Length: 333
Ligand SMILES: [Fe+2]
Image (cartoon, rainbow, N blue to C red; front, side, top):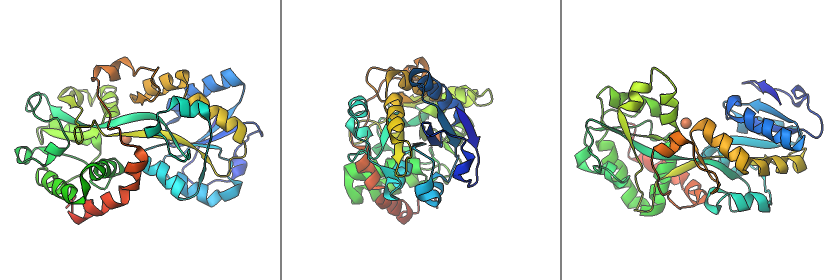
């Protein structure tokens, strides 16, 4: 496969692609998806071209319009996938293979996007200062017991908005406002930094629990400087409304303008197959969505959990309402 890594807008001519190639815009790192695309090409003989876009994918697709060379987009978070659909940049893909592999709650009801892996938004808890069983639910984040003990990144970040939207779906507006107010009152410091910075703060003694995505445990363990942060915490998979742990996803969609629709479908089907699911989940410490594929040994060591069974589509629909509530309680203030 060929790579083009550019942060700024470029023309379709930058692709030295042939008509049969599948062109991919990816916000996922090249080292993560390269082995999977190599396996796809080995199996099918179809070449792929990747443009890695750390940000600005939506704006770029919009600017390119009908002349966009992109067939398939790979990105993370329901927020990004939903935004693509709302902007009219995706088209439905009807595939029995994909729908047979990916559970319904992890794909769009209208087949506009499909999940590829999931990540849970969990609680990182100090091994020294939090007893086993002391916190088991997201609801408890608002309990006075946790006053001055919680660290979290901005409440308006996509990860936290999705969690608040999931809470809103379960509990309704009034209870969600009360939860956000109680949760905010328990913060050890005003929201700042990324997910890993919160675990560092536990290690440094600034707080006792933090909210973060599961794969950051794997990333911290892979960085010598961050290993002490990682080993200072236990992973807790909290439940929401007694149903299960809040999860988000990484996923894919076909662009509206896809020039090579036929081969793009073959790639999308391949990405939901056992080979790709294994490679993808191994490389990024995420959970495969296909039943027959197990998580990596490291990820499995974090423990089993039940995911909140709510459809990500329903959670996505409440993102706007969730953001308004987060702003109304001035969560970051
Ligand atoms: Fe992340």
